[in-house]
Image (cartoon, rainbow, N blue to C red):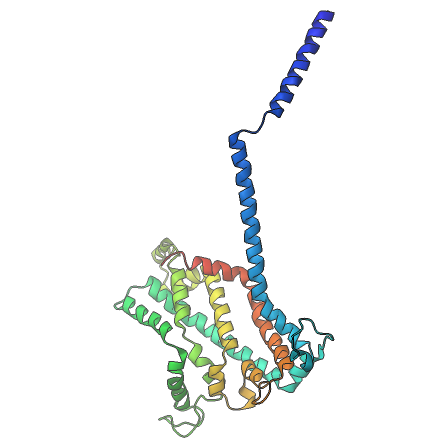
Length: 325
């Protein structure tokens, strides 16, 4: 019996020694390759994060500089070398900037123009995009090519013809049937919004999205007796939320940031938009940088808020519209 116990103890000690030897064996070549691969992945991820951090800093720095400029004094803005942080934070510049002009009216005008333009583009671009994507009619491809070709025409080329058309619009603004005698659509909401109703980019964007939708849904609806407009309204539009949200963000942003057309067509203070109001801080011989930056920060807040709330739909819409050409 003692011999058996000693033999058992000896066998256990041998197993422990073998286990220690097994763990003491150096790593094989395959294990070393796995460790090196993990190290390379971590190094690549760290380099990616560093690059993204640098790009983010470069992108955000102008907005940070604009905010810091808006809370400085005029002397600190012109100081050489420039200082990043103000010695005293003048948040009263925001109140002074809003009171220096009728920015309440300017913001109202910009919201009206942006909302009307956004809704009109969504309606017209969705119907035209559906027609180009799902309906077959003679000359469809040629007409779509002509619509896309308008994207290559600069707005400055069409600026004068648009102004003449708005000025000579018949039976509006004191004009007669021939478009003479009055101001037409000048200095009005219709004049500010009508040129933005139809956008080739919106038609292209929604057409590309509609092509990704399965045609079996429409075929099943037609078998059930649904009309073409019913298919568009009850099937296609409910599935097009991301694309519509994307176009809505683009349309609102373009209308809100537009400067040239409101500058040309508006005349009275009551019809000016926010961008025209910002230009009032730039005079011939000087520029009030603190008030200009303060008003600019306030003017960008609606765009930032809309993008933050619609970021999920915006990203998804951009992704889905590029799936099929």
